Length: 496
Ligand SMILES: Cc1ncc(COP(=O)(O)O)c(C=O)c1O
View 1 (cartoon, rainbow, N blue to C red):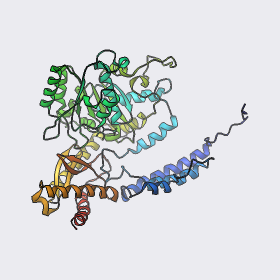
View 2: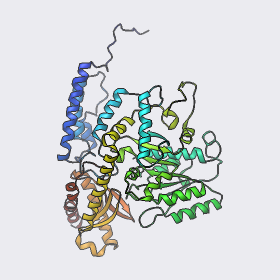
View 3: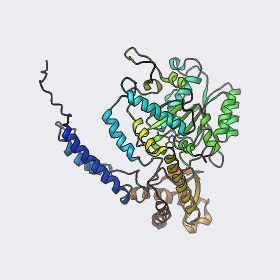
View 4: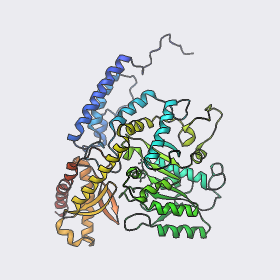
């Protein structure tokens, strides 16, 4: 039998004084580093081996611990020196926002409280804060405030929660107990521009990716609603079973917004579940000037939005909303004997796939209070205006070919002046493809600015997505010069 010590010295315990000293030091370092980000590169070219070396990652786990202060002293500068800063004013890659400073502090506070927001008993304040955060998010985008909802890790999971709610509600019978086999050919309708979460959802929920009907898009890359109607009706006539139709409120590549008003009306007509992926663009519905097509996300049975995109919450934070709270609960709730949770309060374990859950609502709730509705409208509007400004600059510059501008995404490619006349020719396209691919790679490694790519009508293009409240007009006006300078050097090299 092991001995029980009279006084316990847990290796992880820290005195109040030490915690205070190290904590202050850490906050000072973070404040210095955040202040230094704009003047430095977005990222530096690094190798996996170099990073492992800098952070001391090559050896085994130490047999014995060491002083917390010394560990942080080594780790903090090495982490900042080896990271990519999506909070840099010139970071416009993928859809990753600059983090709200109050959200950074919120995560520290959340970890200090460390509630388990799976049950009300284990997280009285955390549960109520999350419920209100979900309601504020719903109301911000014009969705019913009494909808069911839950915070999850991001857009993929938020969409999957909507998907699973639809599956439980509309597959027929007790699909949760019996599975999807024997329920006929369940079909999921969405456009070819939809984010890849839909494949994961169909795969992981047993429908298989072949259940997806990829509806073609119109010239503006939104779903062709006439083609959708035709496909649904043809499938019904063939005895197949439309499970859900998915509209996108801001596509990942170009920010295209499907005609959610028309799609929603069609879903109602046919009694089909309507899910909207608003992971990126959903929050733009908070703008009074947003289009009727976008605001029609309010018609959906379920919506996914991503606080870690346009609410600038530090990763991770997604939010699933389901119009009927009881339908969401019915998709996830079980009551094992080892739970003793009151039924009259919210237990988030009943509203999503997770069991133990962190307090991710805190950073979101704090940021919502810090900016307010009008503050968010201003930031989202400014991001869109900056993206439109970039589109104007690119359009007026004969070194570039403009492709699209939607929400805060602008796409374009570099075209050497002497090749403009032969755009579309096989040899020119081959050169432009190689040139723009290498251009993206060089820009991403170079650290002057960070964009990502899209493939539009078979063409490889650069894509700047501004979900960044640090970006200024001057940052945007620097883009053509930087991109053209890097591109000219690559063009010369490729022709040599
Ligand atoms: C439209 C859309 N849906 C879903 C996702 C997935 O979101 P996440 O990366 O947060 O899982 C993204 C990500 O960019 C997106 O743009």
